[in-house]
Length: 261
Image 1: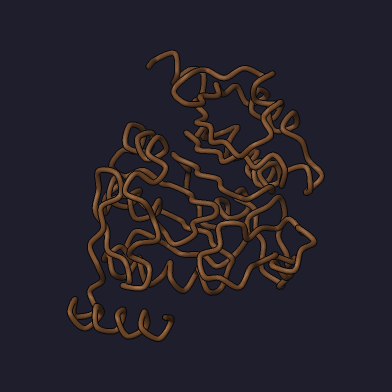
Image 2 (image 1 turned 90 degrees about the vertical axis):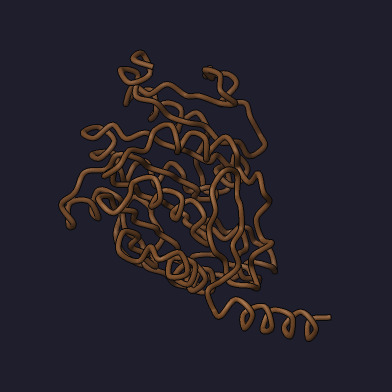
């Protein structure tokens, strides 16, 4: 079966002249390598993409933490245009390779900068736990103590350090850190305080606990920086946010921006 699939993908690559397969995700199109063109569903994270489209403007600077294969990064590049910039962080070597390929297929090299590093609250090196499958969604700084995810040394950097070194502001921040959410936020404290970017935050409560943090700590960080938390298009309260045990996504709106609509 694997041999047949490999032959099929090679034929598809020849038929498309190496330009990838056009795929519709929500209401936009992008190109994928033949091997991965069925990886994402047509309505993948529909609410998150809707939020991007409402909040990202031409010329914006976007940071994508946990860029995976680059679906969000490519859409952000389409929305922000040539005047904008997307910084896509992905530490997993095999996934990073696919990310760079997808950026190239979508002719987005000029305004997406792919960075092979994990993001946390400090600079250095650390163990990052990865599965063998390319595109594994559960790769993380969190040690799951299982046989599927093995630790590999990767570079880490904070958003504040990266922003200072590159001398830019940030308009939009997407964080999908599989349990290291609080570390990413703490490493972006200056950016959040001074820039007040819109944010998509993916919460992974079980992984957060394994990393030694709590939903409550993340809630307190968000409130300290005066953001409203939106979940499923409704304002979310502390009790609901802190008691959730399954993965969920929230949209963070600076209160001044939210009051303005």
